[in-house]
Length: 422
RNA sequence: GUGGGUGUAGCUCAAUUGGCAGAGCACCGCACUGUGGAUGCGGUGGUUGCGGGUUCAAGUCCCGUCACCCACCCCA
Image (cartoon, rainbow, N blue to C red; front, side):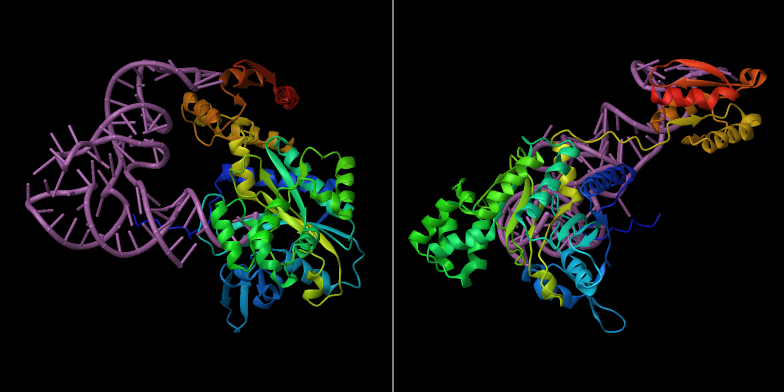
């Protein structure tokens, strides 16, 4: 045997169990997206390097992207995020699209990072955006979608929360502290790091980027001020809308949330588990300049992205993993070699009637066949032996209850359907 | 990219100061020739991640390498 070839570092294999979970999440994302009137789209997974140079964070472009030269000499990037692609697609058809656009997508992304729990180099992300509406109610709709998704996968508001802030509010407050707008990116970075550094290390970092003592104190009191949102007319409207959307339990103001990406211009939000044990589940916000940055007219936009890996970890941690029976519920045994073709034919008939059926393919001992049926998660096992053939019947055993009875062939499909819904 | 931890059967893990590589679960078979889960008995399964070094002797010590995990960085 030759040695196993290693998978590419940071990639994940989706065995059927994991694939079932990924598809389940995809179906929940679809359900929630569509319930708010969003349409699915997809972009290419390869983009020109320059697309990201326009607006993504420097770290993301320079250090975390897979970049290579194709055979024609173009610099190509494996997409590390979707938003620039979305901005490009919108800019390219700006005159023929009718705004606002409500679009969503789920697909693979790549970032060349050091893999850790909840962070792989190849990952899947749900992206959902509302383009062409600048109102706080649009921001609230996206936060409500995030909250509705958390609820729909079984996460409670005591377990996960959508934390919201507004960069314009924060920038105004920083200016009031005498902090220059040019220091904004670095100061936002400092705020973003409040929970990660010790108080001393945090202040030292603040001094490094040129803040004085009173300014640091001012920032500290800002990010502890849970009522700060009341100073922002935009956030006032936002939270009024959140209330009427009925998701107020899931959404709250959090002045320390600021986000790392540079292109956010207004409202920003993240979803976290309340204990703060995991990474953020989603992140997003308003990005009013992005479409113009890739060559379109100025269009306001708001959206967020959620990775599949962290959501899965959080679901597992809170015991909300769905029960995803992957296999067919019906298993047709082969009594002996003489009945093989009749058994296969029986299974084919049942499939034509719309049932999901696994055929055993050889005349193993019935004991073994039942055992396999049980192991693959089948509910009903069908046996067609000499006794049944004589009476033109099929025996059906329900593995859950252990009950068994025979059905005439003509009544079998209906009998199975009834058993399956019981 | 920086710092640290771990790597033994398919899975979870043992193995004393360096001294014969083991257990549970899983799998296969039998008890059980028309019926799964339970029980009993038996069995398969390993180049101890990979490569080198020290030693009479290495799972154990040393060096390198790969992978995973943790903390930074950054973020989904």
